[in-house]
Amino acid sequence: MDKQQLLNELSQVSTPESLQQRYQTYLGKKGTITLAFKTMSDLSPDERKEKWQVLSALKTALETAYAEKEQQFSLKEINELLEKELVDISLPGKKLDQGYYNLLVKTRREMENIAQSMGFIVELGTEVVSKFENFEAVNIPITHPATEMHDTIYLEQKDDRGENYVLRTHTSSAQNYIIRKHGVPIKAVLPGRCYRFDEMDATHDTMFYQLEGVYIDKNISIANFKNVITTFLSATLKKQVEVRMRPGFFPFVEPGFEIDARYEYIDPKTGKKQLSKWLELLWAGMIHPNVLKNAGVDPREGWTGFAFGIGINRVTAMKYGIKDIRYFTNGDLRFTKSFT
Ligand code: DAH
Image 1 (cartoon, rainbow, N blue to C red):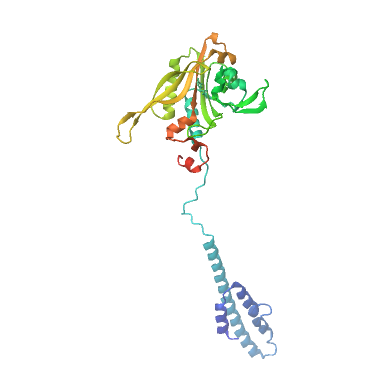
Image 2: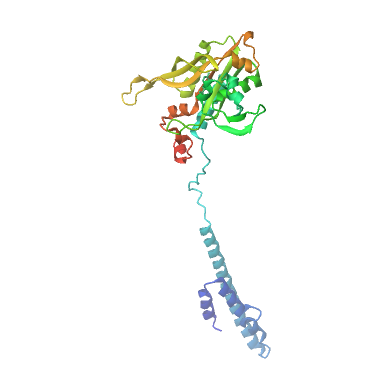
């Protein structure tokens, strides 16, 4: 056994497995060197001593080389693992998609907050209402041609009066519920979905959002209304708004108004102040005594008030300059994301 040759061979071993094998071959229980130690009995004491020294030196040298090699392998393994599992903490993290508010929801929430800051409570109501709530309670007799103002979606289920429930065609259907629930005086807004049988196009949808406002107290006047709505619209559109009221007919108010708004803006082309066109934005009026009576309030006690209804889709379209309201509900994330 040539020591140098054995060491050379060992240095060329390339896997931990073959290193282990070599160890067993020479230094294991039945290894050549281990056995060689045991076959010295027929030698003379001097020869034995000499051979023992040679073997011992060989054993020590091999063991040292083996231990070094073993350490090399485990270092290599650790380095490879580190390389593979390396986390570079200086890299930017992956952004989690957390979802986005639909623009209509965004506008609805803003309007709710503004109303609350003006002392209105926010009510919810239901989308399924009785025919009574949708029509009669707000002074639209079931036989009145006004019932045809809305092309209504009826449900199969019937209420206590044996009448089919309807998907509310306007948030005014909640007036009766709000007044009964809270009594008077009351200042409330109620945003929510409404449904009509309509052909869908860029400005009509079968489902749309409205926000109803109800304000009842003693001695409430049209002047109060004009002030409240000017403040509310200015905050909603984030512009100083001027309001114009034209007469309009709605069975649940008397007098009724159609309301236009305009505002000053800076023309991006000329950089000069400009006045916008009048935009029809909402409908309103002084609550009809029959509506109060239907909700258990006696108008002879001096209760008066106003109600208004705003199309949230319309306000949102105006705020963001959107020409086709179908974008609000078609689920195209590119649209929603572009406003976040
Ligand atoms: N409910 C009406 C509609 O959807 C809008 C409306 C008009 C609401 C006048 C009101 C109001 O509160 O006073 O067409």
